[in-house]
Amino acid sequence: MKTPNALVICVALTAALMSAPLFAQTEVPTTTPGSRPAERSLTLAGAVEAALRSSPALQASGREVLKARGGVNESRTAFLPTLSADLALTHLDEGVTAQLGPGQTLTIVKQDQKSASVTAALPLDVFGMIRAATSLSEFQYLIARLDYNRLRNQLVQDVTAAYYDVLRTEAFVNVANQAEANAQERVRISEAHLKAGTGTKFDVVRAQTELANAQQGVLSARNRVSLAQAALNRLVGFDQATPLKLAAPPAQPVDDSLQIDAALQEAYRTRPEVLQADAGIRAAEKGLVLANRSVLPSIGLAWNLQHTPDTGAFGKKTSWSAVVRATVPLFDAGLSNARKQQARAGVEGARFNRQQALDGIALDVRQAYLDHRDATERLKVAEAGLVQATEAYRLAQVRYKAGVTMTPGGSPLLEISDAQTALTQAQTNHINAMYDIETARTRLLRAIGRFAYTDAPNPGLSRPGAANAHRDTAR
Image (cartoon, rainbow, N blue to C red; front, side, top):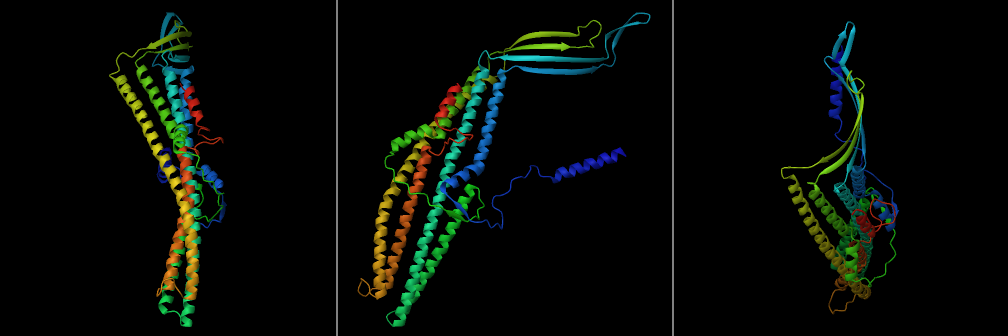
């Protein structure tokens, strides 16, 4: 009966394993179908904090930092002594005995033999290979921490830009609502003129068409708000269907003191990408040191204690030995030369990567700086244009109500329609310029590296100067 029971158990286990997923599915989507989350109030600082807390990319980067830290701890253990024990039980097919006389037997080799040994070993880092390997792992740990800072720098910019994008689209809704209200007023006036005999049916139909277009503009503007809120919700870790009530950040004064050369110098000092590239060069150099020293001997000390209680009549039960071992590679089939070739190429590649990082940062800073200056200049023009367009619409509205126009024989409705189009465009230009300034300022601060570091405990570095201190300790 044992065999059938074992067979049933094996079949059941096989079916369970085949039906189970390969990996545990513990994560659930943030956005669930049919969800109706309540409205949430949010500030810019709260949005950034929520994003930093819930970002999957930052969490994954934090795990990589822990992994790299484990690699450092592993490499440092090579300096320490190791202690191991070995227990063995050996059963021979037969023992060896000798007959000394009648009734006297001497066991020379026992059939069952027990043995125990303890070995202590200590590597001697005479040629610095262990130190080089430890330094290499420390630079890799530094690179992992700086990658966390890089992701943080980018995430803060993305959240800030998304936050301002929601405010921008909400401002566009206000513009669309105002255009709709103005179109409704024109419909009312055109119908009044038609009843009074001073207007035409064409004016009424055209006014109604403009109202329909304005209503479509309102719908499109509200749809853009929903999309912008969904994008922000995704970044901060909310359900994408969550309605948001955003507090407008205080207006930031225009800072003309920061010049492009100073911004570029600060970016070269603080951007995590540059510090990563520097650490990458040092790590590659340590890899070259390891490759060059791979042909050198390795030296170690060992002490062994052996206890064999069943050794037999002529064996020694307990013994110890001390060993100094030097291992010299005589022929490795070209392995060391291949490693050196790879390491030299790695150093050159790391230097090229640093140059590319500097060039990319220079372009990034310049583009953000010019965008900020362009948006600042456009805001001045947009403010003047908005004042003019507002006054032009007011005058056109007065003439439209009176049924007159500046152009003899012209259409008052056409004149006010043109004025409404110009007003809507001026309002749009003004909103875009205002939020383009904030977005460009955010991009400039990110390009400099202002969002990369924080004093709060996190897997990344608290300040860029910590990278230099880390490099010094890893020498």
